[in-house]
View 1 (cartoon, one colour):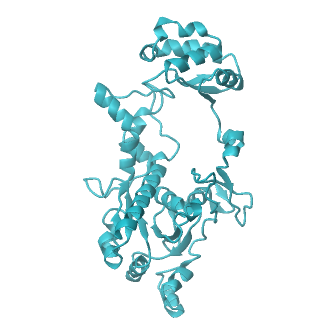
View 2: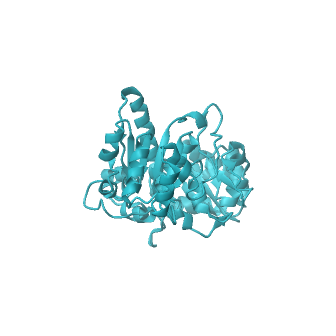
View 3: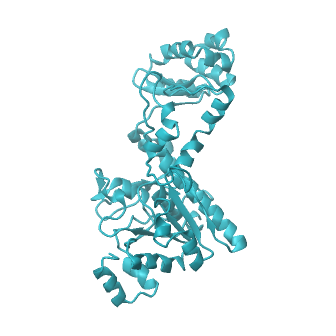
Length: 397
């Protein structure tokens, strides 16, 4: 079962916003005990990203922080830094999103914690990476979409670029971090030694540009903005319908013939301008106009039905509400119930993995800020008197 995969693994999560919390949520879904360390007073910045709210909590925070415990520790205080070093003795993984050098200045860098626990897996997530002239700068998902060139490829030709609305760099970085941590855990099982795992938003953004980099290397030409279309194949884009849009994806000559068959325009398949994919790419505008002349006369549902009956890949352009209500999504079971005290109908997107036909069944609500400070530190041997003194000093909350 997926929720048992990382049973017994303890993770100290010193991250906030999206990338790090998404990584540790993945680890929590896989069964790890995740201890989320937050600053006293406000906690993770995402707790204040509202509206919208669900049960009085930030919807974004709730989406990224299930299956965790929360402790509040001031990392600017010497005793707060000592708490991290004490925790590191019994922790398997430390992940943080501080600026490069910040953890080291506080005595909780990789070298510091590896001294107290040589088997520790240590994963810093940063904006631009741990080296280079921009290493100390902050970064957010849309900023990195601009920096890595992703935003130069979005939108329509002649119009301003637009950001990809999905936090694909943040969430992608979280996935890469989780993958690196899982690889390090596998290696540790063989060697007994810990590992320094590093990733950054910039590297994720550059990685997502892999095909564009290859295309630029082959042609020396910069990609142009093409809306929903793709430069290397056609038809492979959105087409207007009488009541919306349909995406048609014909990745080869055989599928193009099926598109023509489904739409009742068989003559298009024999048109010499569209005989091969390179020719269809060359005459993309004429091809688009010919196909849209048909699709625009019918409702999207009818167009999809015709194309699917012919075996042509396609999809209606769905809204979020459409997706949640779709029978295929319901059948997949990827939307899961996660009742909250003030929102019993709360639902979340589950881990997009199955093992032996089952998703992870671990679904614990995101933690109340600081709700586990005393239990976690008591487990390290901190006496009630010391906890009270730390709380009076503002080191913990």
